[in-house]
Image (cartoon, rainbow, N blue to C red; front, top):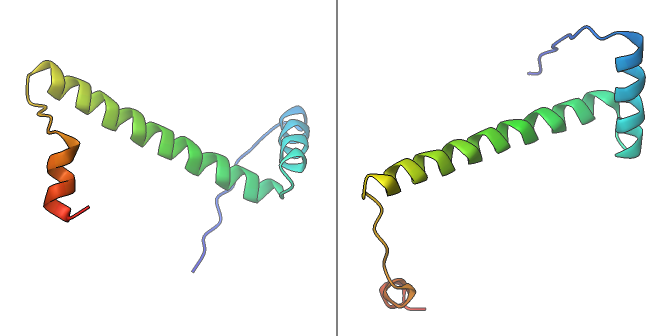
Length: 75
């Protein structure tokens, strides 16, 4: 099942969105959807990095030699 979300834009914004979507060889809805999910992914990645940096400052990050991983999985 799909759902529809409506957003309001003025004429200038619509022209800009239309131009960018054409440059990306896709329709407006597809471009907006792609852009939104890229933003969500970027936000997730930034949160993962922030969490890692906080854990590192607290001394909770531990490193292991790559050889240990290779040996564990027979690589």
